[in-house]
Length: 270
Ligand SMILES: [Zn+2]
Image 1 (tube, protein in one colour):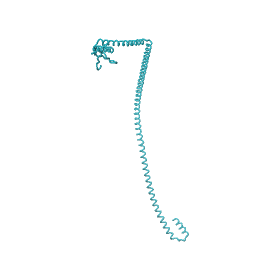
Image 2 (tube, protein in one colour; image 1 turned 90 degrees about the horizontal axis):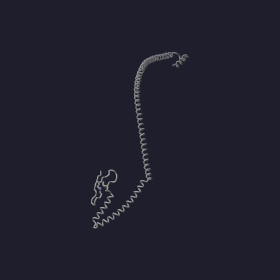
Image 3 (cartoon, helix red, strand yellow; image 1 turned 120 degrees about the horizontal axis):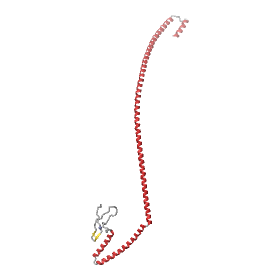
Image 4 (cartoon, protein in one colour; image 1 turned 90 degrees about the vertical axis):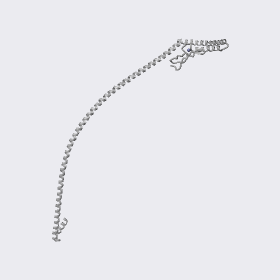
């Protein structure tokens, strides 16, 4: 809706315009200036302005007839100019009409239109082919995505199965380890018992040997003491014999060769 209302400016009289509201077009284009009356347009407005101006001039003149005559002459001159202009325009129109009906030009234009149409058809076909290609690609991607999803689901099932198998194997291994540990504990207990028994035997043997050794040592000590006694007896005996021999020799003469031999032997023996 237009913000401001346009009023038709077509002159009706020297002091009054049409003044009706101008209905604006809704689409694109230059805004309308005049109202719906088909006679209210730019060309008719030019004529009306001239006519009204001439009437004003004759109204204010002292010689209205002469003034009207001058206006008539001027108007006829302008009419002659307009006639010449109109004839020229008509000649142009005839030429344009001839061009419009010229078979060669028509053929040229038809060819151009056909080329445009062919180009548009080719463009549309290319677009259709591209769209079909895109659709095929999309279908293939969709199929590939489905295949990947199915493969992933299959792998997932395999992984779950493998996990269950691993759990079962772990449980079995744990049972085996428990059994092995029990076996091991039993074997260790058995070996320990045997070793303890052997150790006790060794201890007893060592104790027995130690007692034997103590006894032998005591016997050695006793023998030592006896030996010392015998030695002392022997020493006392030797002393007694020496003293006895000395007393005996003091009573034998010194010149005797028997004595010298005996003395020499005795001194060597002593
Ligand atoms: Zn009007």
